[in-house]
Amino acid sequence: MKKIPTLITVIVLAQTYFWIGLSTALTLEFVDRTVTLDGQIAHNFDLLYSERFGELKIDLTAAKVIESFGEPQSKGEQEFWGADGLYHQKWHYPQQGIILDMAAEKEQGSATVSSVRIQAPSPLKTQRGIGIGDSSAKVKQAYGQEEDEAAPISAEYFVAGSVYGGLIFTFKDNIVTEMFLGAIAE
Image (cartoon, rainbow, N blue to C red; front, top):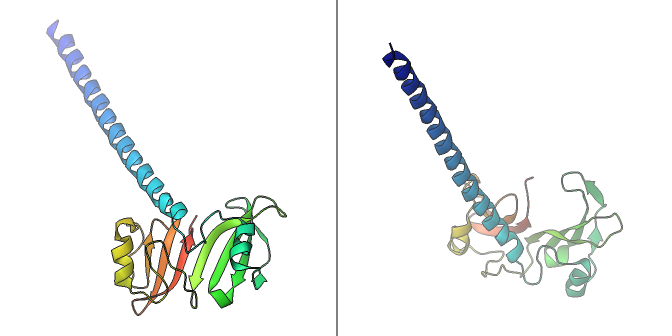
């Protein structure tokens, strides 16, 4: 009779250890994937803050923009975005092929560059020498290592970094027609 309770105890302990082991393995796999994902996200945002078009880069102050490019030809209405809690305003430099999204914490506060859109006739290039009119092959050669694998494959655009913060090239007939530095998704 003593053998049955001992056998039941062994079975219960074996099941308990099995579930603890499985739970631990799953937790470690989740942590490993989270660390990998966090590392990839950090890498993607590195490109956002390290890339530039000539002098233009994320977080450049309004004063520096005006010093380099003059007053914008036009400014859009200032809008409050609930997604980031900032006041945004578009600055247009059509003669230079530049559209900036300027953001500030306060309605009348100091603004900094939140995103940069480069179009023709801009001669500005990325730090890796890509500009309007370059081929999609040249873009992929320069930024292939940073390609956002989560972005859908398309012949019309290429995402380096992430849609949450990176460099997006738009193509027409495999030629760069627009370059965007910033976030296009929240």
